[in-house]
Length: 248
Length: 297
Ligand SMILES: Cc1cc2nc3c(=O)[nH]c(=O)nc-3n(C[C@H](O)[C@H](O)[C@H](O)COP(=O)(O)OP(=O)(O)OC[C@H]3O[C@@H](n4cnc5c(N)ncnc54)[C@H](O)[C@@H]3O)c2cc1C
Ligand SMILES: Nc1ncnc2c1ncn2[C@@H]1O[C@H](COP(=O)(O)O)[C@@H](O)[C@H]1O
Image 1 (cartoon, helix red, strand yellow):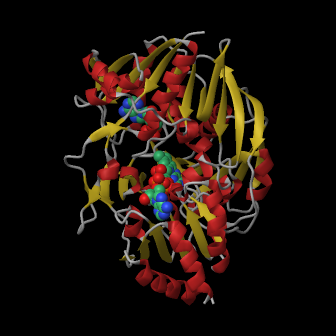
Image 2 (image 1 turned 45 degrees about the vertical axis):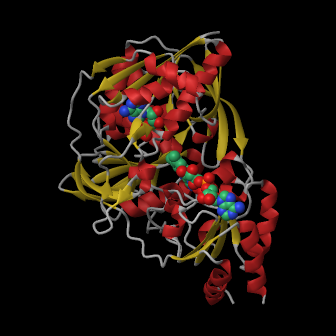
Image 3 (image 1 turned 180 degrees about the horizontal axis):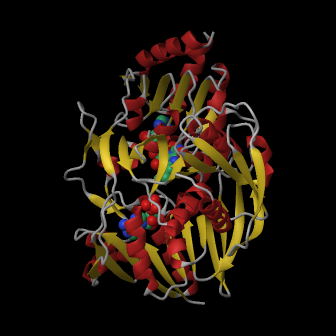
């Protein structure tokens, strides 16, 4: 049976490339390239795999900025059929993000909403629960397998000390864990085709202050010795000495 | 001031109550199976939830307790379930959330909190009107308090979810949090069989074996209870030896409190060397036997 799937995609600055100031420890965020957030990629891959198996349509939603088209193009190349970029994103306000995305989803037919369980830059992990409240749809979170059939969905969910298989009626919200899949690297031809595909853009209808005041933002101090040896013959004796000081 | 504190994980609830009771009165909430283990952690009352529990009916129960009482804050242990409940509660109650906190302090009705930001590269301190907050596991060492909490049973309502099957995870009797020496392998190990080549080193240093997330979750070369990191165990051994671990920030978050860190990686620019006291650039399969030999002589 074909499914209408909405996938939520977050665009983030490339945190792997981010450095912190040597003296102040503050993050240096200027000129960082933007990319798709890690778990959002797993969410896209999961949605596209479900479509490939059952048929249907995958619609991507980004609550971002006027620089978010690049992320949607990448999502197209991975197999997303249609995309909406909603502008007006503000850092630090998961409540606003949830309201804007829920507003859009309410007006969109969908059997499943797929998103990441926790975004890799902020780790807030609030969106799945918030959306489920705002949309009144059940959430099955931290999924490593998703099997829809006959108006129901069966999901294997990972918890800290055990796993569970849960089921619920559709429509449902499903948040995915990193282990659910290995996101595909689209071939060049698909990337080129994706570049020509139109992207819908609209402005968020809501704008509210987060009320969060940042007092400080710094790298935690690390006072490691950082004695790195490229010649193992020199490094091994040092390492052995350090180990032997602790265990005798 | 008064807080309502929930976790599905008994030790996280013990830690959270220990942490919060120093600042304000607190009541606790947990599933009935664990309720007996949290009665002497300083809560005025422990609500014990009866029935099959899911994020939605737990959220409704907490919401009702919150609305019938007079609480200033709701704290949830930052587990997978805890974060889902935090999202659901903050949206349905219209309360501001703040998650994954490593510290909390009330200040004139506001919350001053600290959490990791930018993928864990920085710690951000914020002041906000947050009322629904999740506390990271390990926020305090659990300490029993004097006196026992009163208890009240709460029957859980219906859920939109149903349980098809519960799958226990394979676990070993390892206690990484208490280990004095840890040898941690990363994806650089390349294959499961590599474990046997690392074991002589584990023996030579009388350590415990641990792994990065891909090693424990994706590839299952080790059991999941041996994962170190943000979403795994937080460890603080005297010696932490990382073999073929790149040192992504989510990994560092779990081993940052180690006393001495030793890293072996074939890439001299691997970020793990920034977090190491001693580093050796090279192939772990060549370095490990040499280390074992040198340790034995
Ligand atoms: C929300 C979230 C939570 C996470 N939680 C955790 C967590 O709790 N724990 C965790 O570990 N990760 C966690 N991660 C994943 C983390 O981002 C990294 O993906 C992971 O730590 C990388 O593991 P690794 O270092 O083993 O693998 P890689 O990053 O692939 O590194 C392998 C390293 O091995 C080196 N290497 C290869 N071959 C050899 C050889 N023969 N000899 C020596 N060196 C070699 C390579 O140079 C490389 O540096 C989390 C991610 C997210 C988004
Ligand atoms: N601004 C956004 N636009 C679209 N999807 C988002 C946005 N922020 C978060 N998400 C989705 O929600 C997931 C969990 O994010 P979070 O709740 O912020 O940790 C992410 O992995 C994304 O799938």
